[in-house]
Image: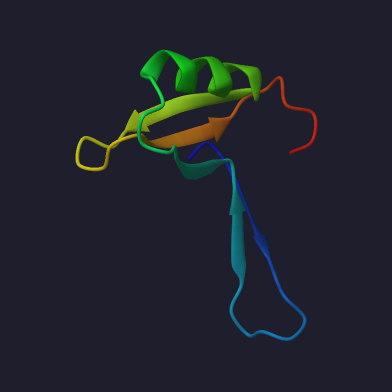
Length: 68
């Protein structure tokens, strides 16, 4: 994780952490090439690929993303 911001909910006593990484899993049967082309088009970078869960990636929002 490159950065994170604490976010406090009004109704909760525990803070949430908003960060730049998330886990994505794609349906079985989708090729690695198609997955990685989609990831590139969404302005995110691959942090790691889970070796134990097929088609599961840890992704990070990259600097080109204007909405984060």
